[in-house]
Length: 71
Image (cartoon, rainbow, N blue to C red; front, side):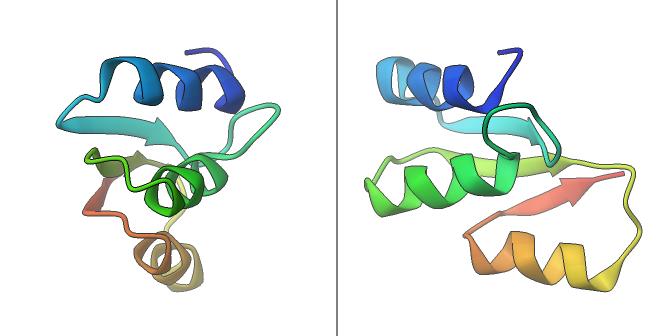
């Protein structure tokens, strides 16, 4: 998906086991998508693809239910 809203629609439609999301995406961040998927009870585990090496960003990703990140 080329933006967060499309990623969320794909998660809803295909319900994959795992999704790799970029933290920074247009229209909705990967963090927003993960939070919404979690709120909706979608079964998808989320990994974040990021260039950020900040502890705060990792903590935020974990808070929205991420299974981990790839740097």
